[in-house]
Length: 151
Length: 151
DNA sequence: CTTGACCCTGGACCTTGGTCCAGGGCGCAG
DNA sequence: CTGCGCCCTGGACCAAGGTCCAGGGTCAAG
Image (cartoon, rainbow over all chains, first blue to last red; front, side, top):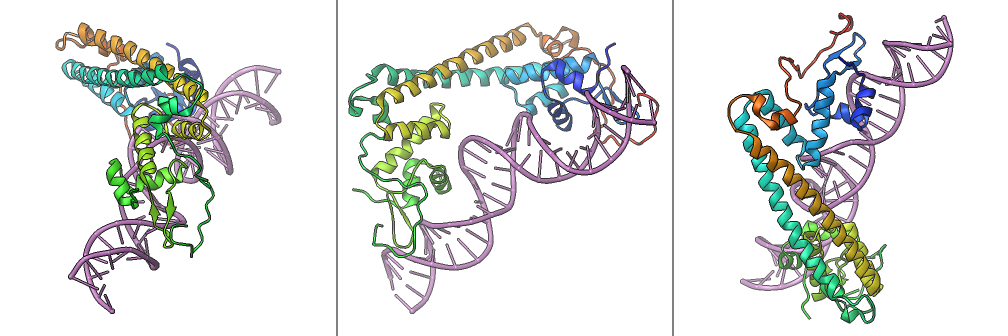
């Protein structure tokens, strides 16, 4: 029956104190109790829960989704918890597919670029829009009133 | 030698006008010129560049990274452009690997959860921290001075 | 009791990638 | 010349997920 202050809890979960309070504000993690002074007290369940929140984040759940999962778990609604997880799984699969497409495109670019020589031979630069010569591109362009038609 | 106003440019690239101006503010896309009135004018190169920016975003580059890519391209530094792209490729591969791990974890959860019955049999709920009964969890906790030691 | 470490609250601030608005100035067709 | 639609600027605002700060109270060791 460990009893932890917020600092000890945060340290054990590898997060910052502010983060714990932020999760509390977000409705994800309430302290088990408070001292008369207002100090938060946490038990093992809270630690587990905090660690779960972090794991779920790594699994790609947003804090909002984690809150929903937590609510479903409180409701002990196994079916809905499962469905939420399936939805997330589908989402993750979609993201993987998108990243795989991205990888193909990038590796094509890398593989066809000689890495030296003429910019004209670099497909990456070509993909970038290729051949612009000159072009001053002043960052701090003070453009005054009254210029010739196209500055 | 098409000459476009910001609206036409935005429409052709499928972005909003504000987004074009936002990219300009971010140093990614300056108009080719300005009318005396201050109206922005764009040519084909700017359109290509804007489209590149969007494609690069889809490929997972942040605007900051796109800016770097653009700077390298201006410097016509083929070698460094290639290296930046390789770095991004490695990054994408890492993200894919993380998502694949995520997918494995989620599908294990989904596959081992019966989807009905006792919460105790649901691995998702167990991963969540499992068995907390009761716990009132008052959102608007007015905690007054003077309580018993642990409220 | 004193001291240093810890904790409290409320609110401001940060980053990223935009989006929207007010108040006013152009461009061009009729 | 009028009017409609486009454009200008600067600045506020959004969501997410924190992070930090000021100003003050508390806990526990010595």
